[in-house]
Length: 158
Image 1: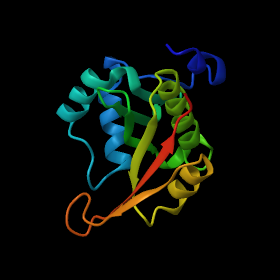
Image 2 (image 1 turned 90 degrees about the vertical axis):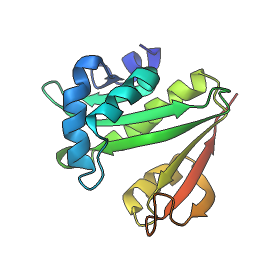
Image 3 (image 1 turned 180 degrees about the vertical axis):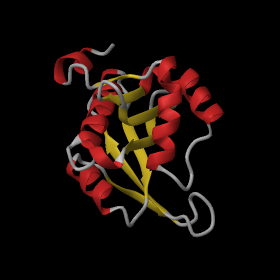
């Protein structure tokens, strides 16, 4: 486990384990009801990116997750998923998850982190901009016709 996970948020943000997959699937369907990851995709993402699959653990339940994927050359990493279940929103947990992810990527000497976000998601945009993310490009139809996204990037130190 990365030292920052223990020191900054003991028992709250941690790396996902195989035992979390059922709970991750349930909360992913709650967070993204229109397009959740199928279980087999979550399973394979865990196998490939498990060292950068963070969960927000509230003891008896998972309240959110962040999934990061780094390119083989370590030049950039993408946030493939970030979400917090409704009853735990507005408590700073989304920020906490992305900050932990940024810390892990910085220690890996990744040069930049990128993500896609719906241009109407004001809450997420506020968090990302306050952390220093800036617009890389607007991408109409990023996830298909009518599903436009903003691509944001954050250069990392090192």
